[in-house]
Amino acid sequence: MFRDVLFGCVALVAGSGVVMAAAQDDAKAATQKLADSQNYSWKTTTQAGGGGGGGRGAGGPSEGKIDKESGVMILTMTRGDNEIQVVKKGDKAVIKTPDNGWKTPAELAQDNNGGQPGPGRFMGRMVQGMQPPAKAAEELVADVKELTPSSSSDGWSGPLSEEGAKKAMAFGGGRRRGGADNANANANGPQISNAKGDVKFYTKDGVLAGYELHVTGTVDFNGNTRDIDRTTTVQISDVGSTKVEVPDEAKKKLQE
Image (cartoon, rainbow, N blue to C red; front, side, top):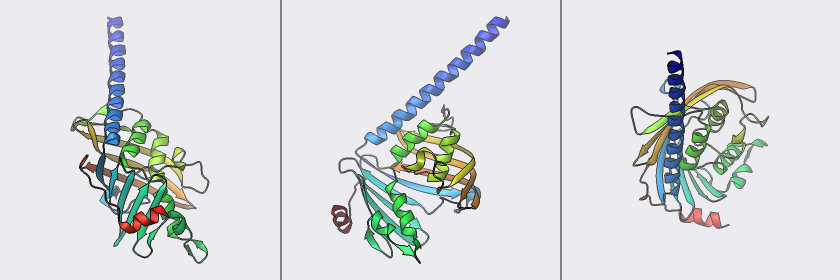
């Protein structure tokens, strides 16, 4: 009898492993279908714990569009009363702020405040590393320790690895390239501890329709310590029917 119980437990564990592996594969497939789409739009919102909007990395909503054929990605970010527009094509990007018109990240980086680096440098670096949701979701799937089917919707959920949670905390729900491979590798970057996170993926007709990323932990940036409790929600829409139009001034600036 003991042997039957033991075999039953082994079979249950093995079966759970098969289900989790299948969920991981299905999530990858849904993400790839979005990446393969001709175009799509999305909206990103970020909230701090308790429903507030503060916390490092939290900010106003942003909206984006991407077209696979042209390789153009357009972002519109709201920061307080200001609107910031970004156009990216390959490794090139131009940014429009209320005060500066269209500028490249290099031009923004030259702005300073009393001889000190100004906010333009941070903005330029942030924009250079921005990724569309399909790429960000692909990295999140890879950083999840295990995925299980969601009981309330067509999708999956699971906890992030510690390194995955650190990346999400340091670089936000949009996931940015560069130092994201090791959030604590750069001594000038944020030092993160007690990082935890989880993510939920949603699908529609087998295509990724959005995700919700929740992270908690402590960030120390240049001696300033802050506890983080942040939820980032990305909603994808108009897959295959999004129109991406680049302003003429942005086009000229990209060609310089």
